[in-house]
Image (cartoon, rainbow over all chains, first blue to last red; front, side, top):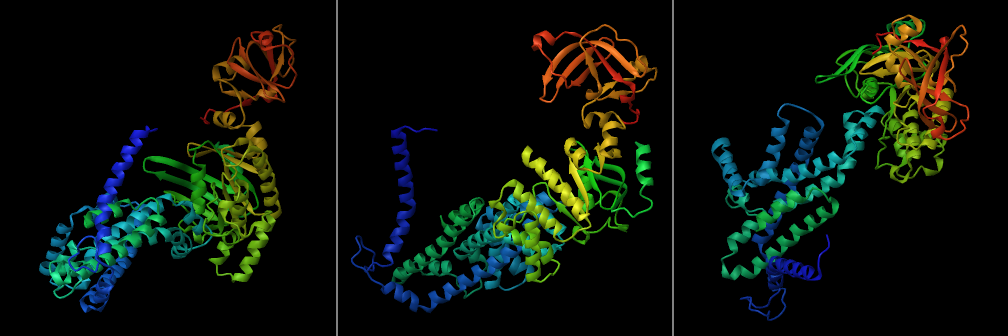
Length: 275
Length: 358
C-alpha cells in the first residue's frame, strides 16, 4: 500500500508521540537516579552517584536483588524443563484431552495476576498447609513463565523438519540420543529466547509475588513498593527502578533477536504487568 | 493377480528373502492404507514399489522402516521377525524423500552420525564418513552444511549417510522426486550402478513408471493399498495383470468386454499398447491375414512427440485408440485430421486382462 506524503507525516508524528509517552517517563526515572536534587526538581541541579552508592550499600536492596535473581533463575529453570516436555508431548503425540491441555497450559498467562495470586495463596496456605516462602514464589512464577518457554519451543518444533528425528532413529539412535544430538540442537535458540523471557517475567513480577511471598522476604519489586512512599528512600527507589528496567529489557531484547516468531505472547504479558 | 503372487512366492522358497511381508495391513482410522499385502523381496534385488500417490507404497516403506506399526500382519528381515521393533533396532536404512539431513551438522558429521550412535571411535568414523562422501563425489565438501548444497548433492549425502552403516536393506522413498529431469536420469544410472556394486537390497518407492521400468529387477504395482502385480519390468509392461496396471504403466488401448466379444469372440477386456498398433492411410479393407486384426476408423487428433507421433483414431466399430507411429507424417494437421485410416495389430500383441484386476 502506498501512503501519501501527508499521511506518512501524520502517522509518523502519532507514532513518535506514543513512544514519547511510553518512554519519556522511563527516561525520567533514569535521569533522576543521577539527579543531585533530592526533590527531583527540573531541570536537574547536577550529576551525582550518591544514590547509586547508597543503593549498593543498603543491605535491604542487596538482599532484594539477590532474591529476585534467585527466584527468576530457579523459576526459569523449572519452566525450561516443564515447557519443553509439554511442547514435545503436545506436538509429537496424540492422546485423549490433548486440546484441553494445550489450552490449560496457555491460560495462566492470560489470567489476571491478582486471580492467580489469590488462588495460589489459598492453595498454599489453606489446602496444602505450607508456609509461604521464596519457594512458593518460585512455583507461582513457574506457572506462567512456563508458557513463554512452551510457546517458543512449540513454534520451533512446528517448523522443525519432522523427518529429522525419524532419520536419527533410522540411523540407529535411541530416543534419548536423538533428543540430545538432533532435537535439542534444533531447539537451543528457542530455549534461550523462551528462557530469557521467562527470566524477565519473573524478575519484575509483583502481583502474584505479593500473595505468595513469605513474611520478611523481599524481591526487588516488593522492596520498591514498600519504600515508595518513604520520602527519604525516594532517590534509592529510582536507582532500583533503573536496575529493574535494565535487567528486564536486556533479556527481552535478546529474546526478540533470537526468535523472530513466538515472543508475541510473552511480550504482551510483560507490558501488561508493567502498565 | 493371485497367480502372479503365487508365482513370485514359489521362486523364493530356496533362499531366505531380504524382506518378507505377510498379510500386512495398516489402517489410519477408517481408511485402509495398506490392505493385506504379501510380498517377498529377494536378497540383492533392486525392487521398486510403483503406484500413484495414496496407493500405499510409501506406507509399506514406512512400515518396513518401523516408523509406523502395522494394524496386523508381519514383517521379516532376513528371516527375523521385526514387526514390533523400533526403527533403531532394524538393520536397514532409509533415504528420505526430502533427504532429512541434519541442518546443524557438517556433511561429515551427517554421514558419520550412524557410526557415532553405534559408538565407533571418532577417528575411525570420520575416516569412513570421508570415504563414503568421496564415493559419492563430495569429498571436497566435507566441512559444508547441508544448506550450502544443491538438491542433487544433498541427495548424494543422504545416500552416503544411509550406506555408511552397511545396512542389509536400503529403503529409498522417492529420492529423485525433487531433481530436474537431466539430473534425475543421471542419478538413476548412478543408483543402479551403486546397487549392483554393493550387492545390497534396494527397495525403491516411486510414482514414476519410467523410473521403475528402467531401474528395477522387479516391480510391485500398488493400487488402493493392495499389490496389483509383481514382476519384472518386461512382465509388467508386456503382460499387465489388470486394467489398472495396463493404464498406469505406459498407456494402453483397452477394448471392453463387448468389443472384445466382437473382435475375438471372448467377453473379457483386452488391451494393446499404442506402439503395437499400425496405421495405414486408407480405409480399404486390407487382405485378411492370419494373426492380424484390422479395423477402419477416423483420425481425430495428432500429437508430435519428437521420436514419434501419437495419432488418435476413432474406430468405426469400437473405442477411440491411440497409435504411436514412428513414420514421419507429411502434410499439416488439416490434411491429416478426419482422414480415413485402418488400424491393425498382431493378435499376439493383444493382452487379455483378467476381470479381477479393477
